[in-house]
Image 1: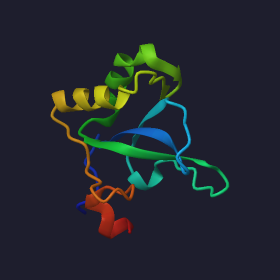
Image 2: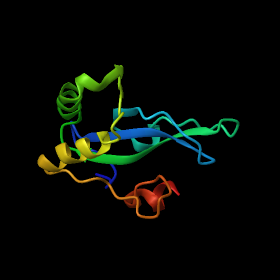
Image 3: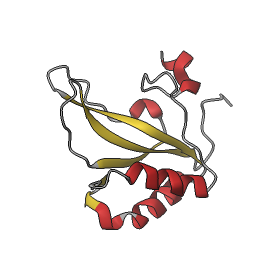
Length: 125
């Protein structure tokens, strides 16, 4: 088995957010998503827009569907639509991090800040 092949039920939970390429203000809402392949995380990738989307908080979890359901149920009072959540206090990422830590999960590191988890830098580029 490849070191990048996930076991059954494993996957990634991520918190995504918009950012302004030129330092402007952005909406505060966040996207909480689940995915089994980091290369499939949605991106805007359009140089014509001043807003872009990134996923700075990514967690590798043992039961992606169960954990995603639990997390979104806990945050249901903040849901805007589908997997988008209000974050007027700008603490949603911290709340997700605390939830994950309580279950023994830590964020996948991106020390160099290139948007690619460090354990995949050599594979993705």
